[in-house]
Image 1 (cartoon, rainbow, N blue to C red):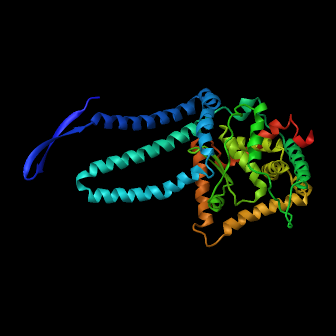
Image 2: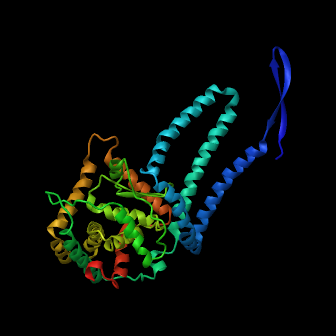
Length: 398
């Protein structure tokens, strides 16, 4: 490696002496090239993902599992959410580092250039890390073929009669399961199954659907779960730590389905309606009655919303009338929980403000990744259910 030798005149005991100083400009330039090159590389990968679906499909099937089996396996060893820790470090560490940088720029007048370069490289690599992990573990996967296309499921439009039929099939199953789960003295759902049941349920989909199998990451509870509730989040997938995280504060009847939903993201399915559908199928086929009930309860929410949007008043009334009292307890308890979060006082942040900011951020994120209808895309799982369960039975119907 070629180096450049420079001389510097200093005073030693009153005598001026020339001292040679070796610098390595090439090394500095190499570091900068790596930084810029990495950022450009990930930007190009994002651009390629938008225009080349076959590339994204290949990546999801053959490359992405490598990150799950390595990086995801390592972060799963930690008993806490590594992603939540990284966010906490960023929230508190970045402002603190900016203060340190400003102080150093003030007191190190003769070395301001070096201080600026050091902090510039630190911030630069932080940005590259975020861009890289988001690209490799999230952004590319938004542009794969749809779940229907990958698994040979039709994508036909369906009539309101077919929607009604699906709704009443769901009600029949959720009513039956509602009497089999444990409940407290007030009739509220009690969760006894652990998160390993979710890993096992998602793992079981390998026999029928593509891109399953391989290592199943360990779902992680979020320490700041109430803040998650303020953001209207039941679960979240962190691409930068490859973790499926869940809200421990939420009403537990929806928790098993939520965990399966986040695990679906770790299999490379980023579209929310697909993760919803995968979560339902996994729950339906689970050995745990609590997981099965949670899946049906969550699916019923989306299907019922569609019934109230597209079907007549008589069908709406008949559907609600068919839902059992036990199920209504869980529906109402879940609703009351979210209302209590919205109305909570003496919180660090106002719940309504946090919710609005979170919704706008989620909407912007989804649309930036090509999901034009944003948050509304969650409800498109009903189309998947109509297409798949037109030809298939629920486990309880077999």
